[in-house]
Image (cartoon, rainbow, N blue to C red; front, side, top):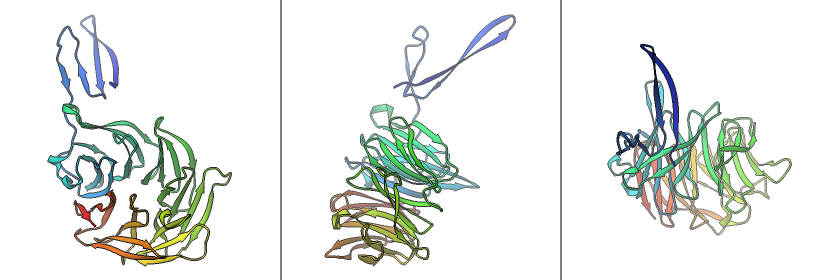
Amino acid sequence: MLLTSLLEVEVASGGAAWKCLNIVNYGFTLQQDVGTSPEVITLPDNTPCQVDKCIDFVAVNQHGHLLMGSSSLTGRYWGGSLWYYDDPALAPDVEKCKAGYETTSGMADGTFLDNDKTVIVGQDCGAVQFMSVCVDGDQRGIKSQCQVDEHLDAVHSVKRVFVNMNLENPLCSIRLWDCETCLVVRMFLPAHSQMVKDLAPHPTNDQVFLSCSMDGNVLLWDLRCQKPASCVYRDCSLKPECVAWLEGAGEGQYLVGLQNGKVAQRCIKDLNFDLTSFYALQRPLYRIAVNPKRSTQFAVCGNDSRVVVVDATEGSLRLRYDDNHHTDFVRGLAWQDADTLISCGWDTSVLVHKL
């Protein structure tokens, strides 16, 4: 689809009026008037010249293609870039990427939508951006479809709920977006009394999700209820940093990653006790990624260089895999298949882990 903005201005010169036509092209090609030039001008590739130092997230679609977001600080200003690779093993090589896009703010989180060519990203400036990926022929590139700047602080988490819907959490609020119209259909403000750290949509029920915050609470949200939020976990001393559903271990079971590096397995029906727990790291956790092919297995990363994979079996959490090849904090985790985990970090590296 070719989107063109036209601005017509009359300029007086020597008693004659001249019309200047300013064409701002947001599509893929710009074709001049047939009478003057029949050639089609291909827009230059907007791929950045280098990957920013801090790689903040990775996402893998159903075809095994990789989406990667990175950020860097230049002086007092943050910048970022978005990258697309056919094979995660090729990242973060600039020469081997299929498409790239430079942003004026750091990249906080992002994910693929159902068609695998449309992505949504949340930025440190508070912008939510819907983008399309084109890798066919000479028209390759990442194009911005819609950007909404209505937040006062960074968007920390973006999660796909179900077809054409996404959750994101700027500051203390949670917003549910319609990805077809780029409009907010529901907003909870404030959702927590302090910054929302993570969101976890239910794997089978599109009306239910979890949220955790610096206020020490994990809330269970049911959009069908008049009062949708209920507290299922509270600890103001060991505050939750990340949350994820673990339905493979039992109905209503979920994981909470804490500031002391512990992962607690809990159930929404038992508000007082952990079912079991496991010290994955010695530092605050940042992200939990459940294996979509093995629903009782999950990976953990945090303010550490380690990547840990844990199995939830027979009522306990057991270490399955531990890797320390990163040289800085690990920030992104994504499962490519049942036995392949992708990780990224602030050491500007993307690693492929074979379990």
